[in-house]
Length: 281
Image 1 (spheres, rainbow, N blue to C red):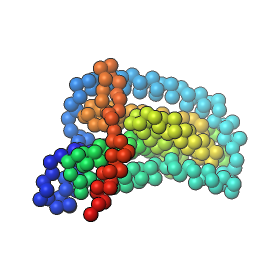
Image 2: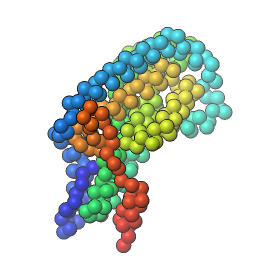
Image 3: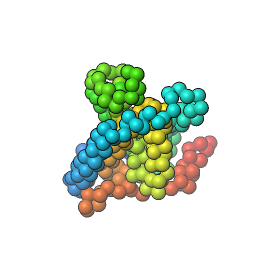
Image 4: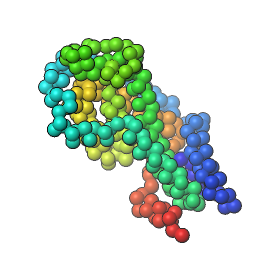
């Protein structure tokens, strides 16, 4: 989100809120300005191509050699003892992830509209990073929904048999929306995006994503190839959004070789001081 270092102190709170929100949206569509964006674009294209090729090969191999065997080993759908897994899997539901990130963005905007100068700049720096997380998940989820509709793969045992090749393209129902897994998309997009901003959280975030992936298999919501495809879509989507932000100097920097790295973010103790200042009378 943008930095507003010299707000008009005569403006009321609603006007400040509109200004913060408007500039936060405007920064996302401004003309790219980073001098090394061409190098970063080439690196993104190269990495995306290799990742997609390897992922596609793995998806096909799983579909042919493993999907049918794996789903036959899982407990029956609706098994009562799986209720903890059904709760856990919702932590990867894209609607819930996006709702949480959207709520965080709204809270940042509401607080930032009350602040001035350095404190506002600091909080809006966090807002820019939340925008990146939100858009990484949102874009990846949108691509996933299109793929689900076009591919139309049946979920495990839809049709009564363990048939991993049950495809009805453009069918458009939940029963034929197995490939790719929406939960895997959201979980891996979020894991990649958080890790891109805060590398020290990489192990924790990808552990979370793998756990979500496994819950989808145990609940017979997806085949193994579905969740691998979802992980691929989520990571490539988050990579593309990271490039978009870096090209506009938002949250990321680009090194001479095209490598995208996170800019230094706000320190937690400073954020606590900002929150205290915003709530003080």
